Length: 81
Length: 316
Image (tube, rainbow over all chains, first blue to last red; front, side, top):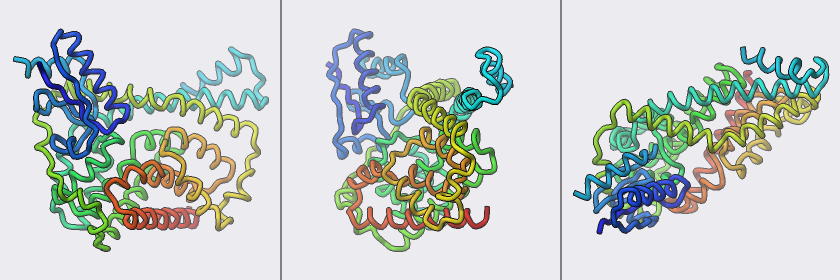
């Protein structure tokens, strides 16, 4: 099972990022655990610009603007292989 | 062309009399709404594309171990073009400090970023013209550089929360550089995102502005907020601080206030207080700053902004 982390202290963009991740795995039909990380120390392990997306421990996106849904799918697929 | 269109709707389509106040207010409303939204779309898009070349990681690298002064100037300028989500202020602060960006330089960045932003630029430009916009950007940068310099000189590193120095930041973005097409896509997303967030405020604010424009006499505020009243600036700043930094909602109202006699310096000071010195931002920054530093920051900002207000009331 894949492990997806959404990094962000909880503003509207972070919620959108989480939604994007959930939609992506649904449309891809992939089994994954989506976890929201709002603890600042945890976020900083990966990046300083939120919102961030971590797939299987690898930072795939950080900061604004948010990626498109197609890109999010791609980011997840790349790590699924 | 926009003016003609607004007049067409007001006088021909709705056949309102040319001298009536309601027609005047409506005409103002339609024209300004169209103009502002057109400007907003074009400018936010352009700035978003430029911003895609300055991710926070790059800015951090540029500023790390920079000397003060040069660093402060660079930081204030980069504050305009580096995109970051409002919720990133804390991680960004930690990231900068950890990378060896001096405290005062970090502050210059954090001050200029919300104050000199694309929405403020568009609204000022659309309503006041390019001269006022240039003055605002110039003074905004000055305030950011000056306040950052002072904070740097005071050596207040001890008042940063201790845990900040213990955090180690990850490597950052590993993903490939975006293609130009992706930059445009991102810019389009960003433009839509900002417009979605601000359109209602802008319409309401322009509506209120239009009402004031049509119904309140021209010199209504001259007595209270004109340049003769020495208290106008501090009072405007005191009102501005607790208001949340939505440049979109505040500028059209300020515009109408200025038309009715509020002086330029007071307007500038009010806008800066709203955008750069907001209560919600203080609460966020409290996570990384101990109270005395937060107090020093607020104090320096208040004094500088008030000084700017008086200065412009005196010279404009």
